[in-house]
Length: 58
Image 1 (cartoon, one colour):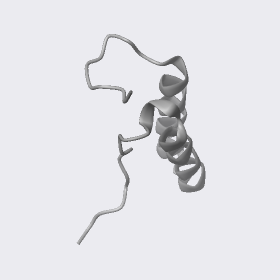
Image 2 (tube, one colour):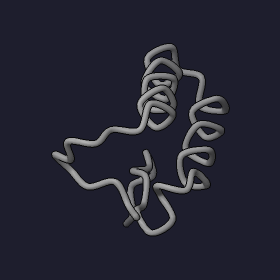
Image 3 (spheres, rainbow, N blue to C red):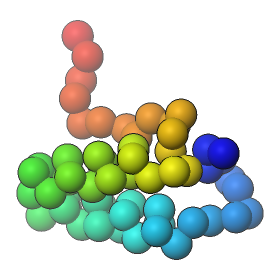
């Protein structure tokens, strides 16, 4: 089941990965940010929920 916006049930692993992703973006470590996005996508709660990307589509 995908994690829903505003869901009362939060996954600690998802929350930790999101914090680490934000930290990597804040220091400009794009490689580490990509790693965390991949981990979020592969996490069971994200099977059908895309994780936002920095890439701008033209």
